[in-house]
Length: 168
Image 1 (cartoon, rainbow, N blue to C red):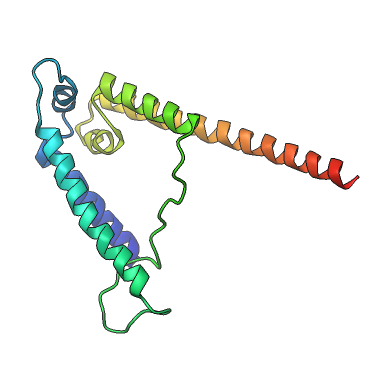
Image 2 (cartoon, one colour; image 1 turned 60 degrees about the vertical axis):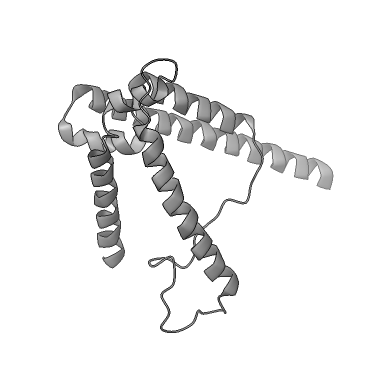
């Protein structure tokens, strides 16, 4: 219950920040992307603020993780507050899935002026274009889920067939 309440509070704070900064307005995002025309740098400032906060929090978290004895020290404020640890990606390679996914995200962002967070926040407006965008976003996530599951299943079957061939 406590985790859910804090997650709801964090989400509401994020949504409020998006609204106050104007990042739920597609015109603001499209103005940022129009570097050859009437460029609006406000999104760059919002991004810089977010990256700055994340950079500091990440350094504190990593320092705590390296210095922490097993079980943690009693009485000290530990991060993350609601979980045992933060999972940090270990894979650093760039593959076709990453490039294609980033390209699709960028094209969608550039065409619609929305990315997932502001789009979900903008659902509160009831705008037809936002509802269509979010529906398309959900359909895209479902399609990715299905195709990834099929690819994993096919890879697993191939690995099993290879193991049988080597054993036999």
